[in-house]
Image 1 (tube, rainbow, N blue to C red):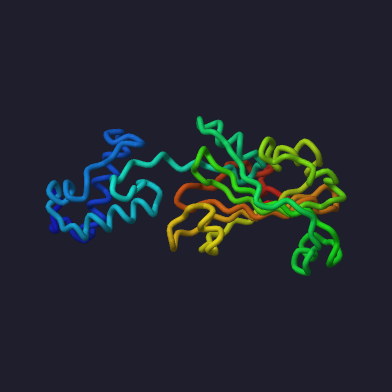
Image 2: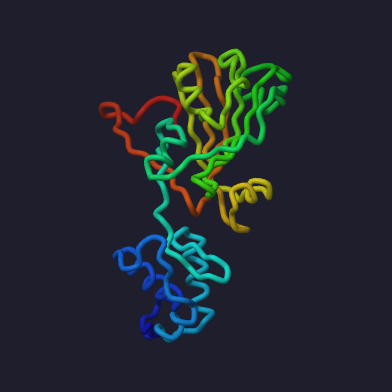
Length: 250
């Protein structure tokens, strides 16, 4: 039973803590259905509104998966994407026992618009290769990769079958990377991105902006969108001597 006497923590927070304690201890492992709203109301002696808010927030935080008409299930821990490395998404998924699939939404040559030309340091209307690819773990969308590629650096980019090899894997074996810039932000996605990633309305995206160089030439300019409730970005590194790391990583 949860009591109002446990103030100042709100009742819904106490309900969340009750659920999290059982999840984190392993009593309720991943994929297990937790007690229903009615069962939690009866067990904890709180209102249905309180339980519903706790479940909604845990789902938004990625700790629960709610299935309409079925119930709430313990979610698998969020995968951690390395922030200071370039790894292929299929390797990340397979390392967790998943199965990578990809859908190519766009793969064509375009002309560089002014903002893109400025960041890629090329003339306006210069040719660029553009790909948009949705990556999934089985049927679960994890990454929307929007990438511009320099044709001079990677002339055969458009000839690849990116359902059998990821662009990252192909690029890493094709063009040397001398510098990398990473910028991460949290944004509310547009409707198209939200639908492709099967996100709830109002759920934020973790967006990783990556630019790579080969010498003085920009090779790629990319935007990677991850569902905020299903992904983490992080990294571990050591300073160089007594100084902070140098380079373009942010």
